[in-house]
Image (cartoon, rainbow, N blue to C red):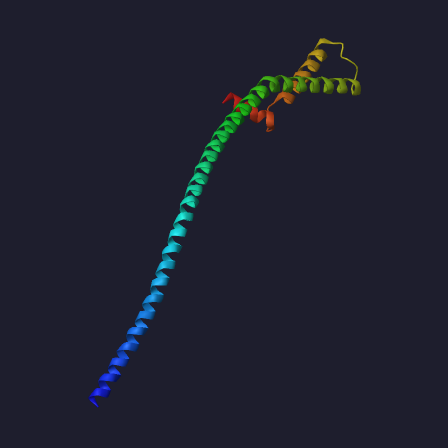
Length: 156
């Protein structure tokens, strides 16, 4: 019986060693394939990283250009605003005065045509002159419109 037990143990060990040898052969194949895969990924990853680096640099350069363009547009907008306020202050004031004067003259002419004839006495003429001056002052009085706001902004 001892011989049979020894034979069974020897067969068991032979089968076990054979199974372990098969497993080790398959494991070595898997490790070789993994090594090949890692080297292929490494070969492809390096150019991809270089391309990504180049893309990031290009994007950075474009952002710098956009910053320069934005600064130039801001400068141009500030210049346009200054020019607009200068034109409004230079041309706007006389235009408002001219419009007010023409409005006062029209009102006076309309009143003259609707009312009695031109007064002949000096007191009546002074009264008419006072009315015209009052109309011109009322027409040139500052209002809450755009030109009044521009005038206030220009004056400080």
